[in-house]
Length: 172
Image (cartoon, rainbow, N blue to C red):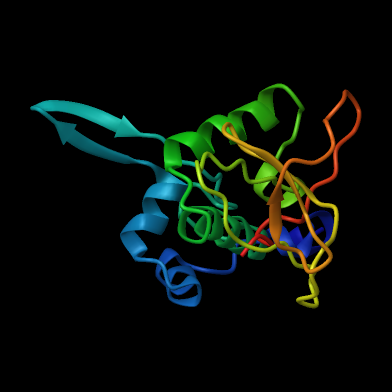
């Protein structure tokens, strides 16, 4: 029996760190630290940066297609949504420990929690059409969207079990 008979093809190591970095537009050193961790020095004390994603082949740092998807999602979280790595780690740890998600970057759909004092933008669907009635909540404000998808302050009160949100990354 070969590896192809027992393993999902998306989980077979097929890419090097440098190949994946090229495809994702991420520095090799960043990708290596996400998959292998990194030792660094802070004020003369040696510290360890823990890996964020488990590689398909930890010994050779071979990455699978699924690893590329995980790295792509992490890149989007960091670049597009400007979420810090510590915050991302806490979220991933919660999904793994409390909800039992084995690979949260592959398995879960994320909501982005905003902390802005002034909320500007628009919620759109995958076709670019405005989404009416999306509930937007920050620490400072609660609002909904109008027929064109633009934010407006105020709106319905959230009660237990009532939750509508736009898909991740759809707020512009």
